[in-house]
Image (cartoon, rainbow, N blue to C red):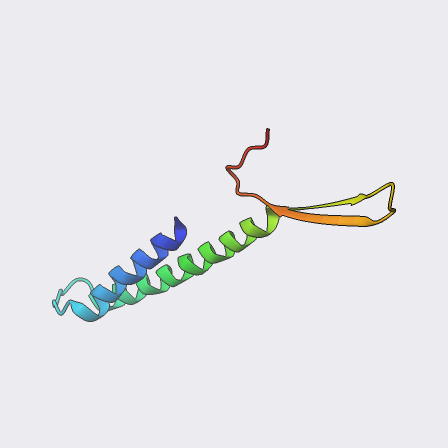
Length: 86
């Protein structure tokens, strides 16, 4: 959700900064556009970092030893947060 919010903020800021040419005496729309674009970029990057961290923490590594052969087997599995195991 934060990735979409970051993109939306960036787009609204770009529209204010580059597409609207209205002169308002009490506010600078270009500056507000640039601020929104910066905030959108920051929110987008934070969203990407959170997605990457979420993917990292959902992996499970299991190591087992086959008693007959004496070999070691390692399995790594990943699951989504809404997966349920029965």
